[in-house]
Image (tube, rainbow, N blue to C red; front, side):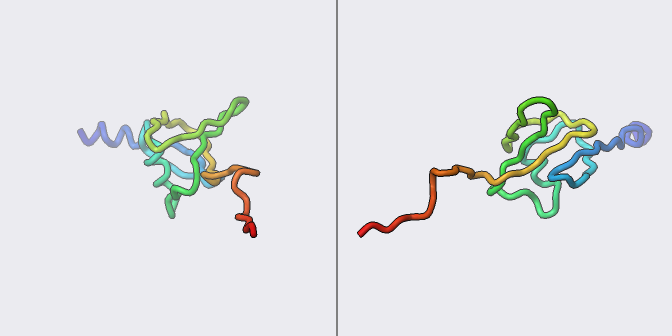
Length: 92
């Protein structure tokens, strides 16, 4: 069994917000990916997978991602609503 374990210590090189990390799981949930950086990605930020030549994909905590070398992720503020919620105006 030790031979099997040592034959599979493969790590995958990924990036989150341009920082390089090595992970060892072949699949990870969004929640697990959020724990990779230190400190972890907070609930005030959304996690996105970079899709070269396509539309980037928002990763929810329950989404399962097939991990491979070179995957890139970025975070963005969870609430972006330009023009929706501005300063509160006080009316007389």
